[in-house]
Image (cartoon, rainbow, N blue to C red; front, side, top):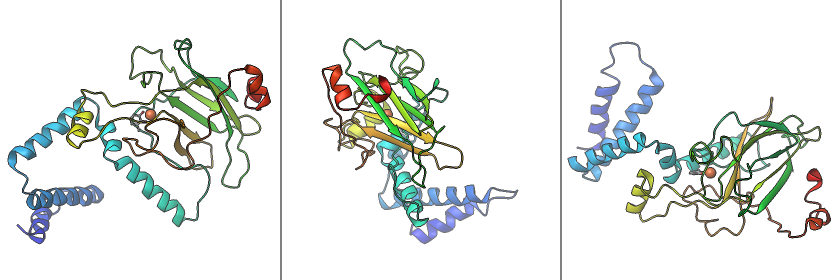
Amino acid sequence: MNHADIDTLVKSWIVDAADRPANPRVQQIVQRLVGDLCKAIEDLDISQSEFWSGLSYLTEAGKANELGLLAPGLGLERFLDIRADEAEAKAGLEGGTPRTIEGPLYVAGAPECTGFARLDDGTESDRAEVLFMQGTVYGQDGKPVPGAKVEVWHANLMGNYSFFDKSQSDFNLRRTIVTDENGRYAFRSILPKGYGCPPDGTTQQLLDLLGRHGQRPAHIHFFVSAPGHRKLTTQINIDGDEYLWDDFAFASREGLVPPVTRVTDPAELDAKRVNAPFA
Ligand code: MBD
Ligand code: FE
């Protein structure tokens, strides 16, 4: 069937079939998606068994709660960010820390501290490198923003996140830090390892068929928000990770790889002025 005939047919199912009040936006989106799917079935000669195995794949991915992992793995979450960047550029809102994807592993309600927080519960202290990070939240006008919320979350040495990994304490490696009177935040944690998709999960199953790995470089997630300001969703990557520019979720960006300074002697922290808030 040609595309025009498919459009007519799909319109008859979605729009013309409505005999009671409808949500026009939902109609519009569903009509488009069903039409595009029918065109793909036509053009690629997708068989009935291929269609049903695709449907059962999505069912299994949903049951396994992996649809939120599939979306970044297919680049869709990155695409939403590309569009958000374009919209901001169009509105003349440029500069500042770049955004990148949220991913599926944020949990609301982390303990809140002002100025400084320790994120890790100490269970991996015998193996982990201690990490210090600090910064300032600036508004669009370039002025520091006191009282901004900096929500931080990251993986442990196994690349796993608290709540999703029941072996960790609740809110391990998750905190909300409210910036101090100078708009500054600081935290102590452990240097995380990269995340890998569950090897027996539905996302990795599809990635295998696509000839892809499911690894992310080591990273730390941030939400930065304050009344009257746009919310920033971003991450930093840990420099030197083998997957730094080979992220299965396509989230690495220039400007999100801060230098990591390794120190062995605590006195060096003072010399390098990296621990001012930790004295
Ligand atoms: C993660 O930790 C993550 O940040 C993303 C985007 C996807 C899967 C796991
Ligand atoms: Fe993550």
